[in-house]
Length: 476
Image: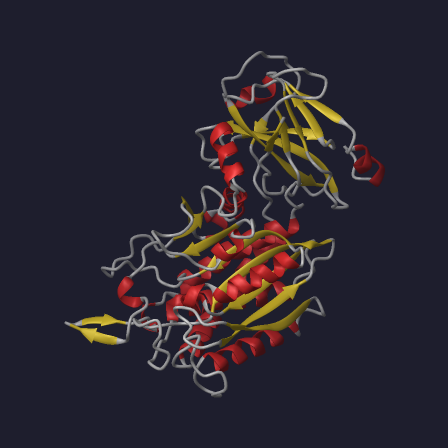
């Protein structure tokens, strides 16, 4: 393989042949053995020295200071004061904006900050037209600025009555914790050299009223044609204790990912039912990438992937991005204490209710930041997810179905991209199990029956960074 431009152009017309023996090492029962290529165990994203150094500087005390400052605004309800200098959503928004401006000043021009403001019309939880403001810091990519990786926390808070905008709503865990993670990540990434991909650090508002802030942000990105290849909502990521006060596992972080893609059409769902792939949407591939990019030995956290869009009948800001077809997932703590969420601050029968800072574990939050940081670093450093991957049921030159499997995809735009890997697994396996280097090509023919296994493609650059896996669309 070569990383020069002529070789990359040649990749658009070259083909590779992959035989059954290419995956024999994975123990997958297949058809005939043509004996050409060799499979290897699946390699995950590289853990760069720069990433390991950055994660050493995650500061739980700084994150604690952020949560305390946000709690000090009394309430951050979406309908609370916009112009009171010390209380309400307006004061909190201005403070976050100032923090991100200070952070951007350390980036040598790489990061810009904006207030994204709009008027939300009346709804069941918005009694009057209400100004909602997102604060967005963008670190533009150097080589592939057109692909985006987004991380959010929501700034607003609430009490028992979602329309009560005057009572104290400290919102320490829900979701000052997520905002603190976002600010800490922005601080850490700002002083690093620009990454190939673009990183977006955002605080969104109006979440408790109906995900309004993130919905507007996602819609704006979609309208501009932004290629969002990964989005993470950090919502309720500050407490490691369970409802009964125990610590069931202070080293576990849940990652919720959708099954059937939210934006799938009826025709796409019908095809999925016909050929499989209900566990292979773009968000599932993102979660698989995170599991490899943020291992326990790097972050001190076990990422528990849950194949469910969110908790039962609930949702967070990642849903807004899923509605536009973007791969998006939600990080949240292992066992929520509902006495501390969406509750008035009060003591009832000796039980403390309310989302108070007393219940937040800042060391746990630091580990959450490390998981996010490892995922974002690896995504923005690696090549982008391959585009337009297709599996052909009737390959060119044939008149009917065949056991030869043909995959084709678009060449990636990255200047340091050197080739691609076919990844494989049993249909019942939770993750990819083997990979075969097929070189700098955009079409591969496999002497492996597509009926029996799942296939994917990922890109590889000259430093060995690997993209998330692309899963094929079925075409005739």
